[in-house]
Length: 175
Image (cartoon, rainbow, N blue to C red):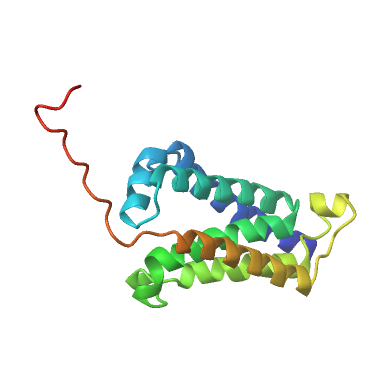
């Protein structure tokens, strides 16, 4: 089972690294922090660029930790948080199916990282090298709860109204 867990961690973690670096640096066809920030602004996640950088760091950092099997519950919490936020801002109203823009892919990723925490990252991990090959159900539930709590915080700050346009200064106002 160690090989299978290592392969799962490497694939899922690697894809999250890519997804995060799309936001952070524009790599892999991404749009970088400015354009991603503008998209986040349109979803009510303001300030957009700061939210984009936070999401990119959570995905890239959480993906790296997951791939290495290091601090696995923390990695899963960060990744779960970004996925729950994505579901809450974009995918939930569209239903479950990804063909309709729904949340099924996000749900599968949450389930995968939760399963990795519960099973433990396996013998081929840095957690195992540190003496922690298995984490268990309590840690898995805690990682889901922490990710959901983080997402709930972000979503609670979401602004559903567009920002008010800035008023131009009167022509006779001193500069």
